[in-house]
Length: 187
Length: 187
DNA sequence: GTCTATAGAGTGATAGAC
DNA sequence: GTCTATCACTCTATAGAC
Image 1: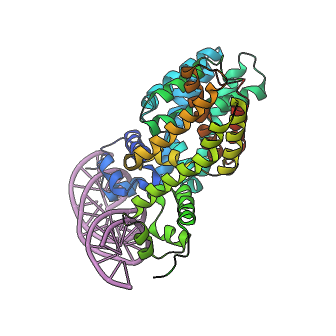
Image 2: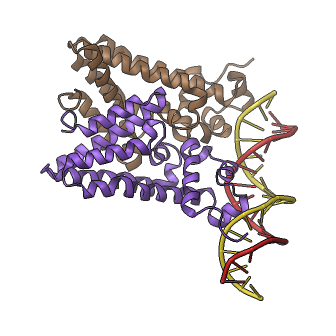
Image 3: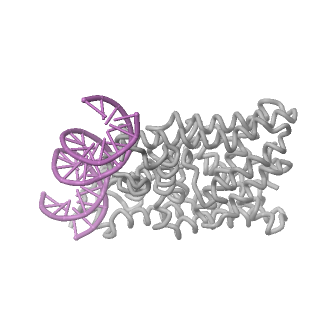
């Protein structure tokens, strides 16, 4: 019984799902145990720091997922339009068309911001910066690209808020549409 | 029978502040007692349904605040530009320039959405609808006004998310700026 | 034997309800 | 203030791979 039943990746995926659904304060150890099919002792073996260390690891996991799914395609795109299209596609599937929440945003709004501020801040800074570099590929001045990127990320996050609040996915999908066609709204 | 030390309005204001800072799950009865200077028994006298009823009452309170501070000025404005300026001013002070969170948004993202979905949905629907009617005053077609309103609310909510996440108020203030000057971004 | 992952009884503290 | 349930967490034990 020594081999790990779950890979660390799979474990983090399941923990992420619990935190996304219940938030940090709302997620109990029992929830986390059930999601991973692990007992308390096993969870504490992997995360000696308890719930806090789990959340920290999950936030790092999310940033790795974004690096692979969003940031890398943005960097590799040759034109801004291509990059935006790739990002839009990735976000649509990652956020399940607006039904699923952005964990760094959720934790940033709540009280857990105090404990995880650095990871949350890093996540959004990296997103906005990477996006700005992509927009600069079309010759947009650096400062303008930064503002446009901030607006796009804000629009997307607001789209998720509205989609969740209204119980409809359209607000999120329309926000993605605006990002894909920045003729209206990016400058 | 003693006179209650706090008016109901004042009580709701203080409860709101706790829920804004800690979220629904994160707010404990002790937190709520301290914020209101009330004992458990007194709190349960005012809200027999416990924490859930407090949150319900606080959400209704927030909608009343918005009605007075945001929706009414929007309705009374003679031009869209005047309405947007009034809304922008009200939001800047209500959200303390981005340092304070929007409770319906926070609760909509978290698990408390299940319990308070109706109030959260109503809040945002009302906001978007009122805003769309204001934009229609300048002759914008109804459907376009609805999309533009949704985008504005999304941009503002995203601005709050980013302001909190990054620990800077500028993303929120810039979102308000875009709302005030809808030449870039509203259509 | 050692190391690693799983397991679960049991701790005190605190939760929300009444 | 009193209640019980649940909280996050500790500790010790065990099973199997090396």
